[in-house]
Length: 143
Length: 182
Image (cartoon, rainbow over all chains, first blue to last red):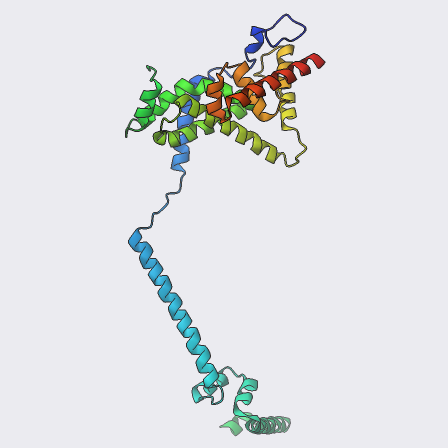
């Protein structure tokens, strides 16, 4: 729509028609394209699983029970450790030996026992070194 | 397909098995009016198509719960206006820099738009409209091009009739000044 005028006047009726256009057949195909998009969006939705009231209560009870068990275990472990710290039991010592944590073991046994163990070990080492230098069969000694 | 009136569309949307038919009637009845309303706000055809689809999807999802407190036509216009304004807001965010003039870009793109069929005067008018503040622009478009009554506009935009009249008056003065200057 072309207008014969140089100066625009907002009162002119022709100016009140908007000057936009659309591709041919746009409105005829719009509803179909829209339906297609709605179907695509609905089929791609991830179904949300609803949790029932009973399940929700059971889950809450399980969580409370688990929390109580963990708390009790922590309290029992920390209190038993502090009470028995002065008198290490044999099971604990065996466990320590398996782990070969000698330094911690010596601390538990006391300085005298630790020194004794050190002397024995030093003697054994010297003996093995001596035998090795003099070509003595190790298997014969340890039999 | 015989056109349904608004009451039939609203009632149909609440009946199981009839929702889709009711919605189809609504789309066919209102698609053009909503399209032109959105087009005047976002200008570009492809952007308008996106916004119109989003508007219709929102309408589809909430049509069954529509309470008829306002007219269907008013409700649809309100959703379309909000969608168009949200779209512009997103566009401004995507521009990253606050000084990027989105309206200015829209104004420039008008000249190259294959779906703009206006002459030089109409181009100048559209470019002047794009320089208005967003709300004033909507008010001007609704009154000047669509002759929407102030009372209806008030319901759609949630603004008093007095404020709308003042807004339109200011818009006209600004546009006239801009056109005179050019």
